[in-house]
Image (cartoon, rainbow, N blue to C red):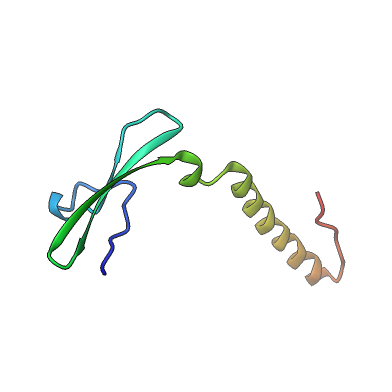
Length: 89
């Protein structure tokens, strides 16, 4: 079984028959996804509604990744100096 993963924003450089997914316009908290996949000689079109929380990363997760990267840099710098630092918030 071959399943195409839906694309969030298809480009205009690809012919229309090759798009595997597209976004529909809905309210700000949700949107619809349409995609096409093929099983044998059948082409099946699917359409689902998705909440934004399931697609977008939360700001908390993004801030955590930035804080972790900054803490790793601080730890490497302090280790080179031979010191220990606390990276707690």
